[in-house]
Length: 403
Ligand SMILES: *[C@@H]1O[C@H](CO)[C@@H](O)[C@H](O)[C@H]1NC(C)=O
Ligand SMILES: *[C@@H]1O[C@H](CO)[C@@H](O)[C@H](O)[C@H]1NC(C)=O
Ligand SMILES: *[C@@H]1O[C@H](CO)[C@@H](O)[C@H](O)[C@H]1NC(C)=O
Ligand SMILES: *[C@@H]1O[C@H](CO)[C@@H](O)[C@H](O)[C@H]1NC(C)=O
Image (tube, rainbow, N blue to C red):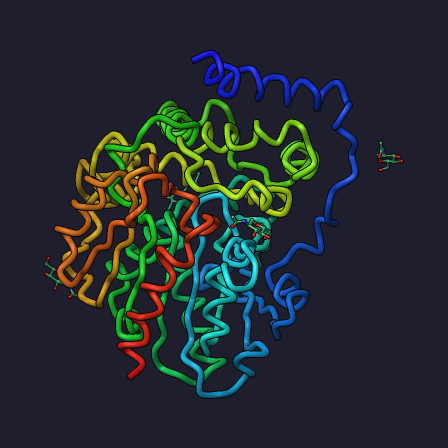
């Protein structure tokens, strides 16, 4: 009991305190901020990789990274493309951070796939717009609804343009799955370009989410939107020296305070699961990667309504925009492409029952519960055993389609 109190409360306070006192809080970063990109991480690991700027229909400029090949599977024109799309506050490096043999991005490249890593609008790598600057509140007037309508289609179109192939696989994590399902229901013609969708911890129905900082922030953001943006904050800022310092100094393997790091993840997403703390110094160089407050507010609405539906602008706003008092549900029953859901019992953000509801709503779907009690929300991207528990399954399903 005492140990639990020390781990849960005292250590984080001491950690943050130490930072402010300055003992660990030097301002030097482990990596130069500019150098942490997925393409560079891949090149450093011996893979061939490049980056693209993709412009959406409404003027956002998104950065995509691509791994074209590896020693095990040199680049060639006839590879099947796989698009990987990250979750909330996350970014493309997340698919590589666990390293070769472990991370999904590297594993797919070794298995002969053409791997594309997306970055949605507003994250660290996708902060440009043809018309708006990030200091303009209008830049931040989007939730994951707009990512589904504009960002995902723009990424898919670009992949088809570059590869000259008509179809690809898509793998998404958390909010990325919501983005995909918005696209598939709002722009159903894009379903024809997808062989199958693999959704890891899909954050769609959210009413049963456990307690975490994520939930608290979403509810606060929703409240702030409903009372008319009284706080005037539109963006969750990614240029976070404090986080980088915690990650780079406190969480490194030699640090006596490394024990506190899983607790920080606990606070953020409710459970640290199978965390490999050794990865945190690298993870915190790009994570949290920034987002719009409206994304959180939209999730705050889902937590309360229990529905997977469009943004709630209040009765007057909804009448204007949707001609209905309540926002309409996304039409998941129209999403007929093959969908594979992967979820875990220790995931506090995406509850088992919420996934069951998604499963029952989609017409062409299979689901897999990860056979590991500790497995949690972020383990789908960084977990110690994600490769054997999740990625091997995905690869064998993909292999079936490739034949
Ligand atoms: C902090 O950064 C400034 C310049 O950016 C540098 O002069 C100073 O030495 C740094 N301090 C530490 C403790 O690294
Ligand atoms: C934000 O965008 C929506 C449409 O997506 C629009 O209805 C609304 O008026 C915009 N809000 C602001 C403050 O511009
Ligand atoms: C989507 O589903 C609705 C019924 O739920 C149907 O009326 C509509 O035609 C469908 N749209 C497409 C593009 O399949
Ligand atoms: C944790 O990550 C490090 C760095 O990538 C790796 O060397 C180590 O094998 C990982 N440990 C486990 C148990 O996965």
